[in-house]
Length: 118
Image 1 (cartoon, rainbow, N blue to C red):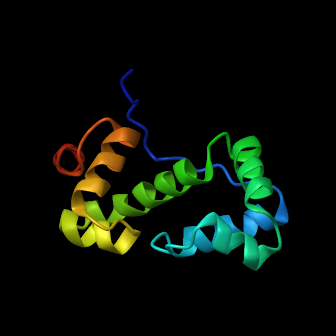
Image 2: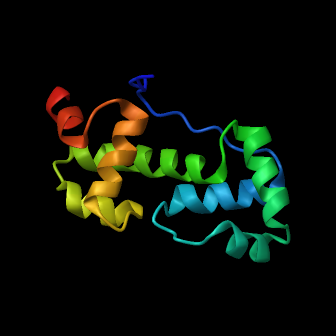
């Protein structure tokens, strides 16, 4: 399977107030490293409940959803000419290679290929 090129990278928001609170916080700061366990403590829900909510209401696991948000947040930075390494750090990836892999998974191309096409 080849990932489809998506532009803009749409992000579905959950409807449940607890999951929505997490989603809004991550949209505001995609680099936030909190785990679903940590988020659950903050919003008063179990990991299982939050996992189910993200799956049912966004069509993606929490990890997939957060990855999409991070890649989406990186698009404007790529357009501004920021380096892949600095973008990776700013959107929450520990290494440039993990960012590149996530970017490729969502867009079907590397960040540099994407930037050249823009």
